[in-house]
Length: 507
Image (cartoon, rainbow, N blue to C red; front, side):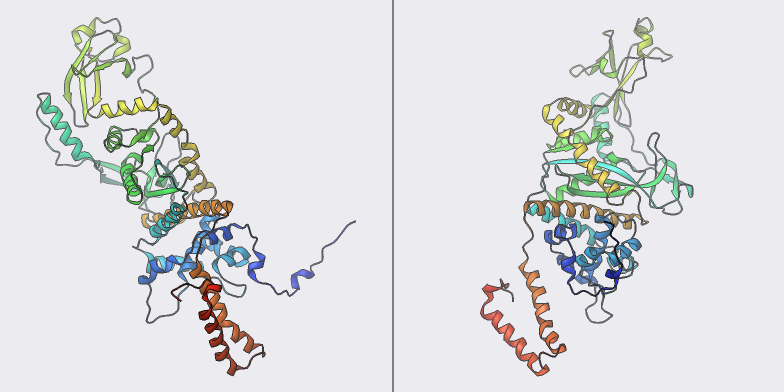
């Protein structure tokens, strides 16, 4: 039987609470049960004036609105406000009824410029949510997975200027220079003089967002971008993050991310990274700190048809290399980049039957380089074959790579909507906080657990209780003179039997 739906329901007046319209298994309910957002008041108390000025928008509401945007992957704050205006669950989450106007979409931006700028508010929110996840036993920081991904900047790739800038020195340059000179002295060479002039290079700087950097990697599209350097645990919880321009190499920020996690948690037992981090210094840093490095195999970059480097055997005792023809390559020098150079005897190589597979040098001399920290890299390669390393490295696709995939596909961070390193950092911390919060809320709901917060629940009860006698007065069922007496009797009863209502001791 054909049935036609009439539009009368559009105009029907119904009496119900907002709470009745939100499904019990909706994500906003899970989030509300997972954490008490009142901690935000303590973080922002010093940023607000208490003596004068107009009443502000509740800071918890501002943060919740931002979480709605990033948890549900809404593309902009303007669109987020439109969604909240018509979405019952979103209104319930921020505590606004049907009649209350939602704050303007510029409110969060203005608060950032006037209040939250140059503060650690968003980092503190991120850490507080992470602390809650640790409290519930969801975080397992014994193994870290560290990687970086580029996020397109809000900048036109064709609008830029070329500038000459100084090349950024490596953070470990002083340590490297010291060990280079020690190595040269040990081999009877003069120490290198310290460079007084810094090298310069030409870079493209965006005129739209000067803080971002030109991302160049293989055959990928060249765009202005930011790099999100991130560390997560076995369960995919983000433990630390740092945002840099897109032209900063991953390995340059590795130690900063590692130290950031160390401040919050104990030292990890192992760190898994991809081939971009497989450098002598990072290998040395991890092994010296007794952290197990988990790094992948890297293919040799030798030209096709020539001997691979591993076919030249290093003799540690005599400090020399032995070529496939069993000839010796002796030490020549240690260069400024930290590589020892070993060279062959040109008189022997001239008549060698493997010359064309060994070198194209015009003086018939084969040179092999070896970094002064190469022993650490070799130890990393030995550990690569262990079963433990294989198991840990296989988890990268389920942890850090999954974090980046979800961040871009589900949480709207394929490109930035803000400009400037400070604002993008704020955005990154909110996104990662939202991802941690969503995971924690879902796991708590599945386990049947929730936050215990009698103080907050009782506070809401008292607010409703204060309004109850006034409601009776407005409806004519209670005279105005009886209002104070009823109020006093109710509170007397609460004090007399606090155990019935789980009233906090502070009350």
